[in-house]
Image (tube, rainbow, N blue to C red; front, side, top):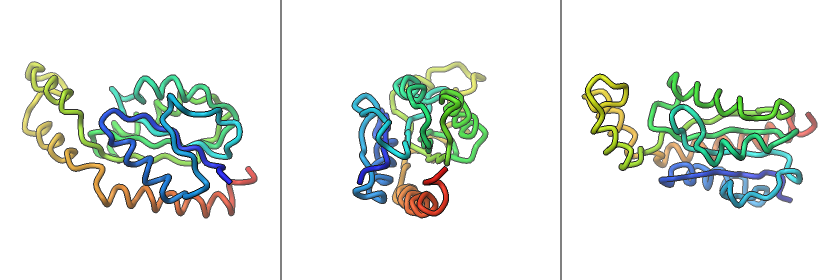
Length: 176
């Protein structure tokens, strides 16, 4: 029985990799689809909604999708070029949560570092010195650190999260 809907949007493939790892761990219980192809969420117990972070917000497609969810148990997952536990990452998850109708229950959040779109890096390299994303040794190091993500360890963390989530869902969340 498919009771988990994994909906994602991905520009460079980072969020798609995480979504596929989550779906792999969920097995036959999950339906995986891009947000622009998602069925109505009504028939699903839980919606995992994944997006790439764009200026501290979910990307535009997910900004349109999240408000459509009503009375659902939701897990938000995101990919971004910054550290997954950074203030920017936490603010981005909070901004996604603000897009959800208050009838929903957020059961979890996940952040994964992802390689930054090369076109975005090219644009940032043209920014004047002193602007927040202008190239300097710190930003260049952050861009380089993000380039290999999501990596095998990140994807295993996603699979492990789903495995643990399914156990917790059956024991505690299912009847909420």
